[in-house]
Amino acid sequence: MQTTHEMVVNLGPQHPSTHGVMKLEVVMDGEYIVDCKPVIGQLHRGMEKMAEGMLYGQFIPITDRLDYLSPACNNLSYCLAVEKLLGIEAPERGKYIRVIIAEMQRIANHLVALGSWGLDLGAWTILLYTFRDREMLLDLFEMFCGQRMTLNCFRVGGTTYDLPDGFVEKAREFLEVIPSRINDYEALLTKNPIWMTRLRDVGVVSAEDALAYGLTGPNLRASGVKWDLRKVYPYEVYDRMQFDVPVGSRGDCLDRYYVRIQEMRQSCRIVQQALDQLPPGDIMVDMPTIALPNKEEFPNNFPEVVRHFHLLVQGYAPPEGEVYLGYENPKGELGFYLVSDGSGYPYRLKIRSPSFINMQIFPKIMRGAMLADVIAILASFDPVLGEIDR
Amino acid sequence: MALGLRDVALVVELLRGLGVTLRHLFKPTVTIHYPTERREVYERYRGLVRWDKEKCAACALCARFCPVKAITIQTDDGEDGKKTVKYYQIDAAHCMYCGLCSEICPVGALSHSPYHELAAYRREDTIYAQERLSGAPPITMYR
Ligand code: SF4
Ligand code: SF4
Image (cartoon, rainbow over all chains, first blue to last red; front, side, top):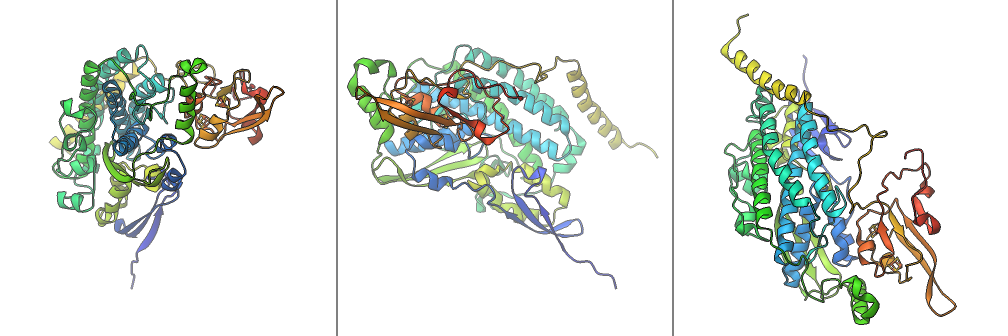
């Protein structure tokens, strides 16, 4: 008698569709998935431990490497957590600049998510278009802070760089073209029957499951839960911005796709409003214990030199205590839990990274799916391995 | 085989998608032919770190603050009791171009240059020390 038996297939770690170095151990019965186990850790860099040996300000460039597709959001999240610990707030203009850059970063992140998702499912064209449009954003970032990917542009208490001349005009140019570009993506994907068939009713996550597994960000909203930290606990200047929180209804891959498309449009709205409201003024807090002194005064102002060295060798010492701050990263809630023992170094830093927690649900929703759907589901969660393994 | 309504709808939608690609065919190209054409970087671009020996005050703050410790500095006491730099090097393979060192250097001895094509055959060539730290980096076959 002929029998069938289950087979274990290793997807990854070096697989083009796993968005980094992740391994999915898939147990298959024919074409169907019986069990799926994500194996992570190949990209582990020990960031949380690294933070304990660094001054608060030194860790900012390291946060760029968490979710390397949205570094500005990581910077902002970390800076906000330290600011909360110190009990300070950035000045108005600083806040607006941060919101502008972070929302642009959200668009850039969703563009990559969309492009690589299309690529995984065999739609090459969309990748080229999204990357072309992301290039405009990267140019803006380069203009703003000098780097395209790992921005390191925010500091505790404000930003280092003011918006350069011509930035606002260029940003407005971008805002003018992007809505029609998003329409193009929709013409290519939303109305494409192949794309729809591949995504509809695939990888369905119910609202209860989404909450039970701790999903956050677009993945949670696609399941119909209206939870956006920018609305629920507004930080920076989000309470002054008009924007909607797009939600899905079915919780399948198609909803996760559509929520992201909508979020890009909403982010455009936020950037537009922030550019309109952008006030003049300082970009860094005026606090001698936190902000670096102005270097031009150094030749004839020795106490300022001493303060400069003190700030960079000892750092600023937040009061003893602990703080958790969740931030709406493009991928979900990025949280930093900081414990301070009153010295210049964090006693403990714990990073709640959204991709890591979103990934918990994989074994549950992959069961019963076809192998080809695994790729679609994986891409629909938009995981980034830099963040999963930290 | 008769074509159903569904198939017609399918073809229409696919044609609409192809229409988008067709429209893009007649738009100006956005890519550049890299080795022969190059784009200018912006003014604030954070490329290879350059060090000005004349300006440096040998305070070693940069080496201390660099998050990845890409900077090595050895100081010496000069004749008039002032500190001088004996040896200074930046490991470009370690450096992540974060811009912190040039931001904190109290005398502005460190700056970012627009050079970013720094591939080298040997790992030693990625270490920029002493006199290689100012001016343009040596031209390799990649630049
Ligand atoms: S911080 Fe500036 S002055 Fe001090 S050692 Fe470094 S380069 Fe020289
Ligand atoms: S740019 Fe950053 S990583 Fe590179 S030498 Fe300066 S501080 Fe170190």
